[in-house]
Amino acid sequence: MSPWIRPQIGVSSCLIGEPVRFNGGHSRDRFLAGELDEHVDWVPFCPEVEAGLGTPRETLRLEEGEHGERLMLRKSRVDLTATMREVTDRRIATLEVDGYVFKSKSPSCGIHGIPVYDANDHPARRTRGVFAQKIIETYPLLPAEDEGRLNDAVLREQFVERIFAHARLRVLFETGWKPRDLVEFHSRHKMQLLAHDPEGYRAAGRVVSHAGSAPREELERDYTVAFQSIMSRKSTIGRNVNALHHCLGMVGHALDDARRADLVEVIDAYQGHQVAIAVPMTLLLHHAKGEAAEYVQDQTFFAPFPAELRLRNHVPA
Ligand code: SF4
Image 1: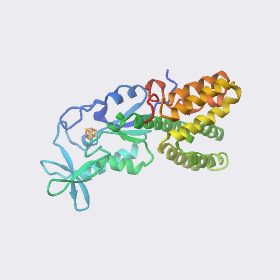
Image 2: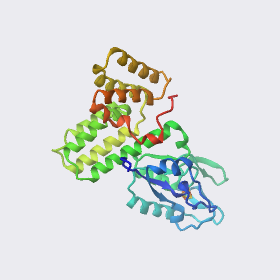
Image 3: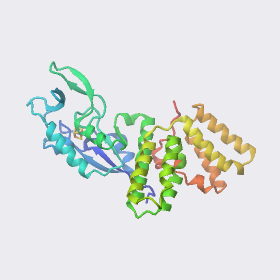
């Protein structure tokens, strides 16, 4: 059995092959329904079906109203804005997920560039779909993407990294955790957090320093916000290099000059955009195992998600 905690991921149902689209079809996404499917539990939801629309159905679009955009059935001119808001509120009341993948270009599910038509039938501006907008507003730190953006190697890796981190923290707080468990969790994530936001890492550490004295709910709330805020910031090559050098500092003393020079060389090659981060990571991990440097080996930085997803092999642009 896989040792990985399976993230629970909200998803627009059509993306994993459910035939709920207006034309009775689906928009099965190869990565989501293929590779990622083996590692996550989906929480599918089609807001238009939940709003009582059949399949197949009339198409919808956003139109400019007096007080913001309206979700309209194009032909019959029925305004579904209030219904969709009720559907969304019901969904939010029970939503417990580690991330969300929305269908692009949908007036309900889209998260980027959904046209709002004016009285002249022109796309006057662009916004989010009605359902997606409320989910993102309610959970601003929830990892959320659409399937189109997940075709980008960097965005895909960042999203997958975040959902697995989110799931680990959720499971920690779901169990009867003790202060030392939170200290250990933070310590195991040190390099990963440093690669995203060094200042945020130190702020989260201040929360952890109250483990054992502050009320549990307060600690859970404050650490969750701190941790998810850090993970929402993009890791950069410079910060990854910084984390790699931290690790090198912990194993380097046990290596001879030649092996230490090799490590510095591959870290430099990564910094120079010549190799993927997997190259210095693999070499560092190899030496950490050889020198029994458990603190380094156990860092989530080296294994933030299952290796089978093969996400760390792109050379930085
Ligand atoms: S409403 Fe969302 S889940 Fe349903 S078919 Fe449209 S895009 Fe897919």
